[in-house]
Length: 184
Image (cartoon, rainbow, N blue to C red; front, side, top):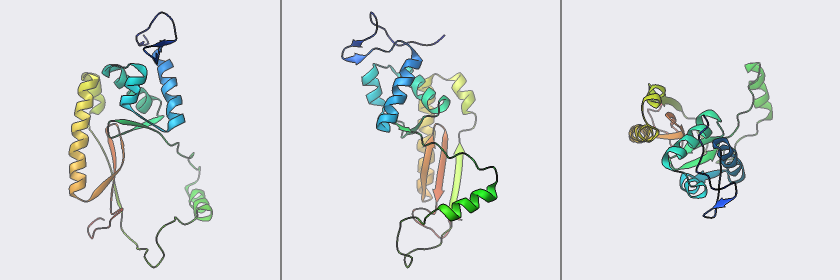
C-alpha cells in the first residue's frame, strides 16, 4: 500500500500549500525542487508540504537510500547528490585518461606546495539495517544522531575532518586540510 498525505477535496492548494495525494507524487516534486535549488532544509519541506515527522522520515529515506538523489547534511538539510562518472572497464585506461586530461588543481604556488600523507577512513554503524526494521523512524533518527555526534567528537579529537556523511556512513580524512606528523 502506498502511503498518502492528507488530502482535501481534490488537488489544488490547502492553506497556501500544494496538496499532494500520493507519496511518489511528493517524491517527484521534492526531487524536482532539489534539482532546481540544489539543497532544501527539512523545515522548508515540512512547511511546503505540511509533513509530519513520520512522513518526513519516509520521504528522506526514499530520497537518500532508495532513489539516491540526495544526501543528508547535519540531519537538517537535503543536498542534491552528485552523479559519479561511469566506471572505466580498464583501470589502466582510467589512469592514463586522468593523467592526460586532468589539469592541475588551482592552489598555492609550487613553492608553497607540500607532499603529505592522507589517511581516509570509512565507518558505518554495524546492524543499522536490523535497527531500522525494529525501531520507529524517529527512534532510529535519534540513534543515528547520537552515533554521528559520538563519531564527530572522536574524529575531531584526532584532527580529522568528516568529508561525507550519508545515513549511518561516514567518510573521514586525516591529514587534510591540515597535515599532522602521525596521520599515516
